[in-house]
Image 1 (cartoon, rainbow, N blue to C red):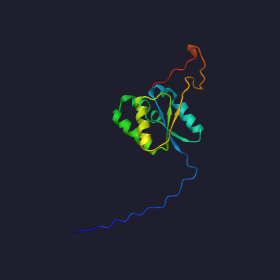
Image 2 (tube, one colour):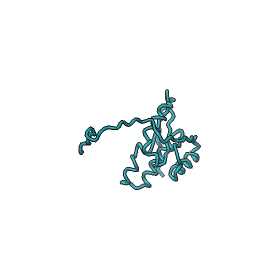
Image 3 (spheres, rainbow, N blue to C red):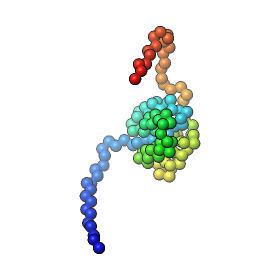
Image 4 (cartoon, rainbow, N blue to C red):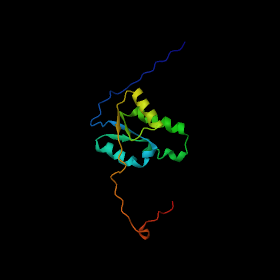
Length: 134
């Protein structure tokens, strides 16, 4: 019988200075268009946001299996300190809430105004810029 000794050395971990809690921003695809405003809201509260719609666009335009995206999304939730729900709770958001509660993460809910604080200025068609092809 052969025995091997394995030595594992670890450095003591120092507490992080100025650590900001990481917030998973959960939202229905109906609120996809508000994702930047939601991320801004989290940042303005002095926290670090993460959001599947910001990382994976709109489900990567369905070019990746939905199961892979759900697994990646759930990994993000596992690394967060809290889950904040914005707007209506869809089936997908309900699953995110269920996972967060299983992980004993705080869950907060926010109503969403249908009038984000954006400004749009009407211009004439002749003044519109045309996007250049890639």
